[in-house]
Amino acid sequence: MKLLTVVGNRPQFIKSAPLSVALRAAGIEEIVVHTGQHWDPALSAVFFDELGLQQPAVMLDLRTSDVSMIEAALRRTLADQMADAVLVYGDTNSTLAGARAGGGRPVVHVEAGLRSGDLAMPEERNRIEVDALSAYLFAPDERSGTILRNEGVAGEIHVVGDVMADAAARFAPLARERSLILVALALVPDAYVLATVHREANVQPSRLRRIVAGLGDSPLPIVLPAHPRTRGVLAVHKIALPPSITMIEPLGYLDFSALASQAAVIATDSGGLQKEAYWYGVPCVTMRPSTEWVDTVNIGANVLVDDDPERIATAIA
Ligand code: UDP
Image 1 (tube, rainbow, N blue to C red):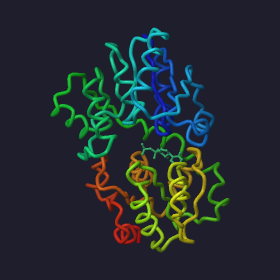
Image 2 (image 1 turned 90 degrees about the vertical axis):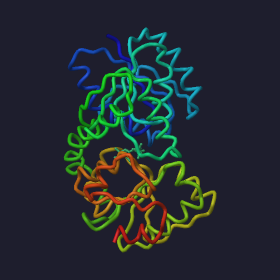
Image 3 (image 1 turned 120 degrees about the vertical axis):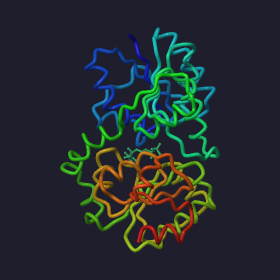
Image 4 (image 1 turned 60 degrees about the horizontal axis):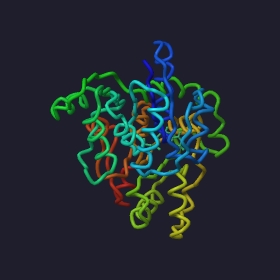
C-alpha cells in the first residue's frame, strides 16, 4: 500500500509529525508531497527541522492557494508516484485540492467532521466537501463522528482522537525545558498574553484595526508572533500597534509551544491553537464569530469575542 500524504500549511506539518511516525511503525509506505501553499521558511522549513520530519519526497513549491492549480499538480504527482490512496489533513485549500485530485483512489481525511456552522468561512466549505469525497474519515472526537453520521457521508467513520494532541503532548514538555524564548522576550510565566491573528477575514483592515484596539486595551503585555499576511496588512494600512503589543516573527513549534503553554491567556483566531490552549490549561479568547472546536467553548475553556474591542479586552481581563 502506497499512501500519498498532502501537506502544504503550517498546521499540517505539525499534524503529520506523530502520524508519519505511526505509519512507518505500521510498515505503510508514505510519500509526502508539500504543495508549497505556505512557502515562507518561518511557516514551513522550520517545522521539518524541529519536528524531526523527513523532507517531503515531492516539493511542488506552487506558492499559491488556488485550489485548481494545486489539484492539477497533485493529479500528476499521484499518477507519477503510482499511489494507491491519498491522505489529507484539516481544512485548507491544499486539503481540498488533495481530495479532489484523488481520481477514484480512496481519500483519507484526518480531522474529519469538524463544523463551525459558518459557511462564510472558506475552511467550513472545504471541510464539508472533503468529508463528502472521503472513503475513510478519521474524526478527532465523538461530536465530529456524530456530525458525519448525521450528514450521511459515504465513507467509513472512525473516531481516533486528535493528532495535534499527540504533537502537543510529545513536544511541549521538551519545549519548556529547552526553549529560551521567555528569557529572550523578557516575559514572566503567567504574566503575558500570547496573540495570533491570520484568518483571511481578520486581516481585512477594518477588522484588524478593531482587534488591535481590543488587544491594546488588555491589562497584560501582549506578544504577537505575526503571520506574514498580517504583518503586510499592518504595514500597508499603517495600523499602528499600541506599546503593550510586541510584534515578533512567526515562531517554530518548540518556541511557540513554550510561549503558549506558559501564557496567562491566549488570544487567537487560529483553529489549532484553541485546542492547544485547552491542553495546556491556558484560557483562550477566540477572535472569531464562530468556532469548529465547539467543545472548548461549551466547557468554558474558550470564549468567542469576534472582533469587538470591548469584548476582547474584557475577556482577556
Ligand atoms: N504555531 C507555531 N508558530 C507560530 C504560530 C503557530 O508553531 O508562530 C503553531 C501552533 O502551535 C499550532 C499551529 O501552528 O500548532 C496552528 O497553526 P495556524 O494557526 O497557522 O493554523 P490553523 O490551526 O488556524 O489552521
